Image 1 (spheres, helix red, strand yellow):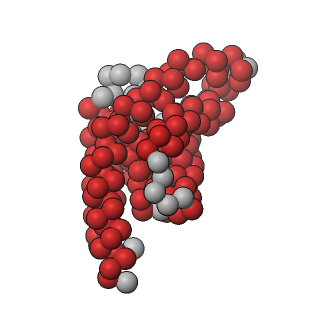
Image 2: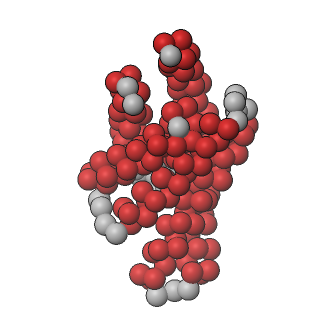
Image 3: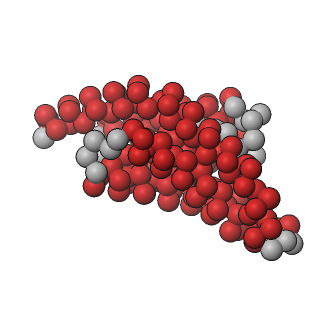
Length: 169
């Protein structure tokens, strides 16, 4: 991993952390999932997982940490791995596919976190998951909004990085 890629990861992590804190007053809406998807697509699955770990730990230091932090990392790490594999296997991913994946990721994140947290409430998994679906829906819709806002700029920067990286190798 070169210095330029590390710098890009740091910038993405900063964007996600500041964005998450800035919109924390809106339940389940944050740019983290969208940033991890973009990082995974353009920089690979390892970058997606690194972003998941960095963003979760650092933003939870401000927003509050607990046992859910582990499952947030697992959820976002899984999304980073899937988006990284998509970026490696599909060249020039159409924007509508990225949007559909960002919607799917909102529900995937909620599902994984629900798998572990329902035991705290004493309810069954189905009841807990169904009660959380409105929050997962806001997460999914927030992902779409953030993807529409972030994708044009970030894809431009990363395509330049990819071109420069290919020219130097």
